[in-house]
Length: 132
Image (cartoon, rainbow, N blue to C red; front, side):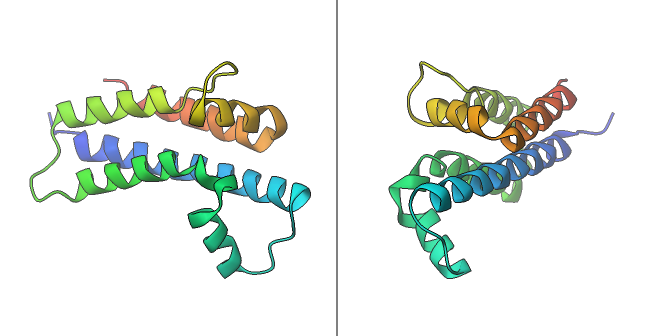
C-alpha cells in the first residue's frame, strides 16, 4: 500500500489555503466597512503583513508555512508528521465564542460572514477525508 502522507499534507494545505483566503476576504470587507477603503493591492498586502486588524490571521498563515516546509523537506514526511500536523490544524480551526486570539476572532468571522461558514464546512470535509 503506497504511503499517502504527502497527499494528505497537500490536501490539508490546500484546504487551509482556501479557508485563509476566505478569512482574508472577510477581514478586508470588514476593514473597508469599518475603517477605510483599501485602494491598491500593495496597500492591502501591507495591511495584511503589518496592521493589527489582520494580525490574528498570522497564526494560520504561519501554520500553512509549516505545512509547506514539511512537504519540502529533503526527507519525506512521515505518517507521524502528518498525524501531528492534522491534529494541530484541527485544534487551530476550532472557533470558540469564549476563547481568545485566533479561536475567538475565527468565531466572530463565522458570525458575520456566511462565506467563512462555508469555508469552515469545506475544511471540516477536508479533515474527514484525511482520516486514516
